[in-house]
Image (cartoon, one colour):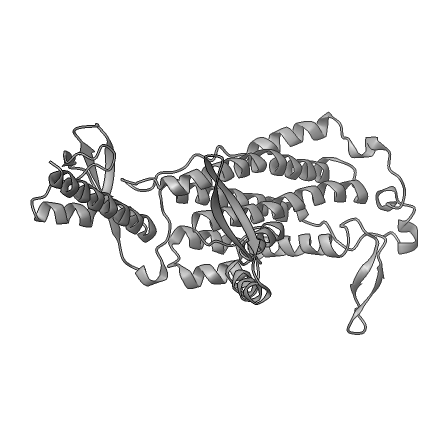
Length: 385
């Protein structure tokens, strides 16, 4: 057994020196192990279509897909390579506290970052309207403390911005700060503003609950707690740090030549977290491609369906809310094509697709507007014939 006084002389724990670059770059044995592990961790992330009939929400799709593509590639490259390197070094290289901590922290930070990116995507697709950065929030709040109107200028219009009076600004500022909240997450359910808001607003479905369960799991919580300690308190390879006092309540300067963090089974925790993240990215993809978003809380347990129809004039295939189709058929009325504005739609003998309430009512209101405008055009044209 090595005594603490002798640990300073052991190469693996001699961390208070400038390392040669070769000590951070490893040989072909490590390289081959990294290649094998990266292949094991990577995923093609192809969406699984779990519904017999589904209708894509183009609005959600356009917002989510670019962010999901970025997250998929961040996972398959940055996260997989950093994780594989850390584990390959632990298993195949002579243990060195400083260099190993360097690679482990790299994987630790990137996986933790990815959880923030996951929640940014959720914020977009669930229309939660939280703001993802203080800089953006400040600009939004500042804009709402001004009057903006447009005046004619050189054959067009230009915006004219004027500040509010002090009294008006005070009221506007309070309202803007209350309305525009920052996206705040935490693996502690009681502290996560974002998760509490979603549970209050939405009827959480199975897929979203799976994401919550993984994020709140013991392995992820332990991992994120470690990341926060490294960011805010001490590096993984530190021998001297501020730590809890084991004798009296409070804190003290800890001197531990072998380092404060013990790496026993640390590769197990790392692998559990990379697989957890891979599972969640897959759930996000399936949620978007299956249009499997939850209903609002007040519509929990209700089902909403879209009916496939076909325009015989412009040859468009589209879907309409089933209540609209049923109403027109019940009153022997012709359905209006929202694309070419003709009344030549045929109802297809296909299974209806289930959608969430936001998608359903958005299309219901939009189609009603189309019908009203078409009716107004007919009335106007008859009056002027």
